[in-house]
Length: 111
Image 1: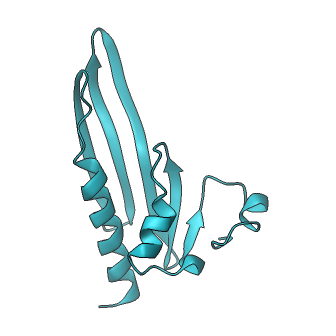
Image 2 (image 1 turned 120 degrees about the horizontal axis):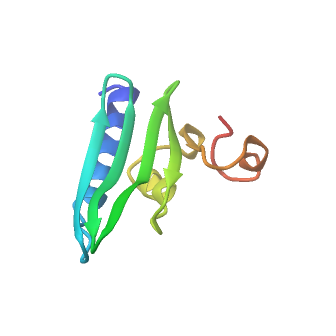
């Protein structure tokens, strides 16, 4: 299995795991969105809680230039460390929601 295929599999496996958790409140659907052609992956919550609309992306990951970019993490899960435990090297993970300046101070890739 090539690097890109492995990274796709890791990201999808991670999102399948966390996308299976349904909120205990409201009528909310958790959607796992996998665009394997362009390598965009998200977990989005859609629905209603009482009379209030619920819509939001809790996790957004892209694969660009053979690196996994964590574009958004609205959870308490340490996605980068989970990917490392799945065998993804830290130098192939970019914390995209940190500014490029701040990334240099992490153990992960700058970009």
